[in-house]
Image 1: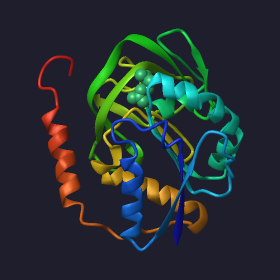
Image 2: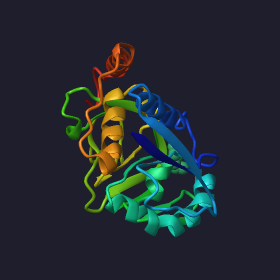
Image 3: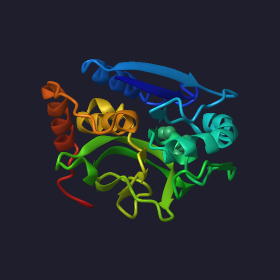
Image 4: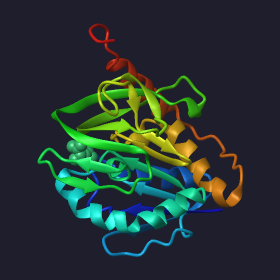
Length: 246
Ligand code: GLN
């Protein structure tokens, strides 16, 4: 088996260890004997919608998002074609915002988005930052997905399905308890971290979605995740608010 991963704008969109998610996906696949090919695709490159099983986009400051935005919109139809055909995708923060309909920055500039997710994002006055935990129903476990967020943009769902429900933290906009978005096998989220190091259940879920496209239902042999799961639990408990809003 071979997993073909496309890393979009690796030099532009890479905040708070986002790139680590690609390393984690690679390792977890290779430990199961699955070969992994990672292709960086950036400004001006063509994107073959049939060539990849999984796409990854990290986060970035407004300025880098501005550089990537027009190019990503141009690649939008290819990316949508891939997702409609079943490809998996993980987009973090700034990458997630650019896959929505638009992102209005704090200077009032509107960056057009791809429209893969039926969401839009507008900058607020205060950054939403801190540790966050969410519940993702599709994972079929009570174990939360944890990470940290740091974004000025507030994202509002315009019919999109959220990725999860906020347990603590701000999520999409700090008001409606939704976090991220989900469309077919594509996931957008505000969780940095790198997200997948502390959430091996989410990492394997994504790998299964990605492999499914070409290989059908795939059973991934379990790995020894004792340390990763201990970190998940310790971090979750450490930041669990005991009083106040929750
Ligand atoms: N620049 C965007 C914002 O502040 C995204 C930041 C990020 O990717 N962490 O909302």
